[in-house]
Image (cartoon, rainbow, N blue to C red):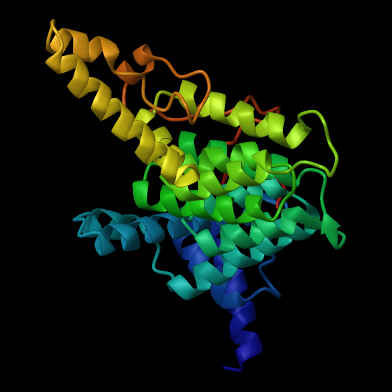
Length: 326
């Protein structure tokens, strides 16, 4: 049978199985029919139902691959849910949907699919495309990056993939101006005090020639220092202080040790030493207090409210059932 006739037969058989409520077979035959007979951008019930089934199958396949790589034992359960469709055909179909979403400006849908399918490379491409609309940085670029950052905390449950998402977000924020605040938050999530120290140094040292007052960049740097101390992560803040002022941090530690030793030798012993010990990081960051050291270790940073809440792509066909592919 000629290839074209075979594709036509597969397209007809796919619609027959669709009306028989057999989406697995319908999807398999539709992908065999090719894009000429199965347009994933159409908005009819047939295309939408099969696109939904294809996305769910690809999500399950990606999760199964990650679980197998991590030594998980969910292979049998997931394989029973997957249609008998080659993974390469599913991947090609999902990539076509992502490309169409980027071309039509449906960034929220593209980001949801990239997050749910655990595709960090495609996620980075979508974010970079949203940052450059018409050959220049788009006005909504920062908003979509914050959207991804919030969704990664609210939706993504896999820790290793979440770290990769945060790294992608950090790479994109580094290319944008005026996003130092969110960049520091991401570096804190990634536990990179050296990167945070570099951002703070750049802000605090940014002063116009001949300026007699504190500039906006310096004010932002001081505000980030205050927020970093208020986050309660004293261990991370101490690492940042050491990276910013290595000499001062050593001198402070030596002075604190000398004061503690002197107080221990004085009448009163250990109680006097505890009272004489200065609060950590008092010289490096303003706003520190002795009571702050009792805060729980490494709490999640609080992100400022965003006008666009992230759509939950995980679960039972949440983002994949959304209409409007074209």
